[in-house]
Amino acid sequence: MTRTRRALLAALSVAAVSALVAGCSNGSTASSSSTPQDGGTLTYLEPQTWNTLYPPSAGFYPNGGIVNNITDRLLYQDPKTLELEPWIATALPKVNADATEYTFTLRDGVTYSDGTPLDAENVVKNFDLYGKGDTDRALTVSEAINNYDHGEAVDDHTVKFFFSAPAPGFAQATSTINSGLVSNETLDRTGEEFGPGNAEDVIGSGPFVVAKEKVGTEIDLAVRKDYDWAPESADHDGRAHLDGIDIVLAGEDSVRVGTVTSGQADVARQIPAPDEKQFDASGLSIVAAPTNGVNNGLSFRFRTPELSDVAVRKAIIAGIDREDILSKLFTDNYTLATGALAKTAAGYVDTSEYYEYDPAKAKDLLDDAGWKENGDGVREKDGVTLSLTFNEALPQPRSKEVVTLIQEQLKEIGVQVELFSGDQAAQTEAALDPDTIQVYHSMVGRADFDVLKSQYFSKNRNTLLNLDTADESIGDEQLDDDLNAIASEPTTAERAAASKKAQERLAEQAYILPIFEEPQVFGLRDTVRGFATESVGRPSFYDVSKSN
Image (cartoon, rainbow, N blue to C red; front, side, top):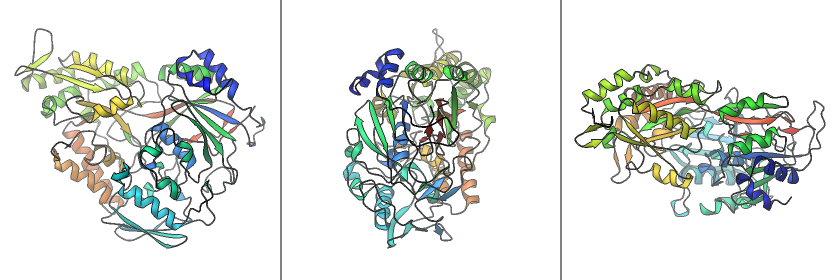
């Protein structure tokens, strides 16, 4: 079968998709022995298509799954211990006392797939772009890098970075896919030129390269045979085991599940909770990778008229039964959230006392706040209906079903809930408008204190819309100051204290409702060996091999 026919993948039946994928997958040359063998092509199914390979904007999981495998980073973060270790750098950086200067020594002999050197000047060019952005080319500043001033190439193998204020999270930032190193020519591209249709021209130094792209349908990665600079903790040295990875769009849940369980694909991301039991069968397995960051949950846009009263926000929180949501929609791989952050996240604080389900309390709070039920059972105040619109978080598991259950629960206390539907572009645009979306469903993974700032700070994701972009005003300056301190205090103890303060304010002011600790759930055939993810659940294919 031709690759063109796979463009129909998301719309076809499982049986038809299986035939197509089988017809274009290369046979594995790996043996059934315990020793990984080189060769074979892995077929990997994605529920959504990628939209940019510009590393600072690659947080969306389809983006990150590619960037993680075509780029290297200065440091590597062990996904199990979360400890940092050298990668392209030969050692952990030398850092001055107030964390405003970082010095890295680079490996010798590392090159990009176009043959150009990964040297000190190139590393500086990477971070000068990532740390400052370029508005003329529509390239954003990395949310992982704070207080960046500039970099200097001390010599061919030594780089030094300078910051305008303490940047204690910078070392970890250099290990994230947002700091994936790319060639000089790639760094000269515009935002649009990092987008679909240009994947083959995004040049990294990683173990795989983009060999072929079919826009909106498929990206094929090919092994880089001369790769020889993996992190020390990798299971092997030299080239990756696989010859390639075919990353195929399969938007329908049934397609991804059926194609893997029938043996016509190897791995699929985002296996829905109700389908996990299918992977209990012989020859199949589930990998539920933690994301180590801000939990899956709701952000209440507290500057909107409906949510400006903290009593109303507290009532909504008390009216949502999170345990009911988990028991009806999810499996044991999804843990009830006890705070803004996952328990494995840096700076985690238990604020679960603020999120108890109590519908009677919710009704009393709304009564006292002046919101009375009308004849239809919906609360009103001064002629305004208490109606809230939630987004459908397409990257998040079962978001539509979660919001539908919340809709039923809040109806019991007189709050009307609407779901904003639409594709990712429509969701992204709507998310910026408080008149359209009053409650925002999302999460973000990063194994560092700074993840809390990334989610809620006014100049990062701004999920609370604390910053009103129309007049540049800040609704809660104290929260913004607390979040900024997380990224700007020089010591771990000070960062932990700032994180605790910010988490407590988020809870006390009823700005958020964490729902569950979100994993990335992959379904695999047992012929796939060595499958792993980086520290927030993006696939890493370097150590993966296939057996017959």
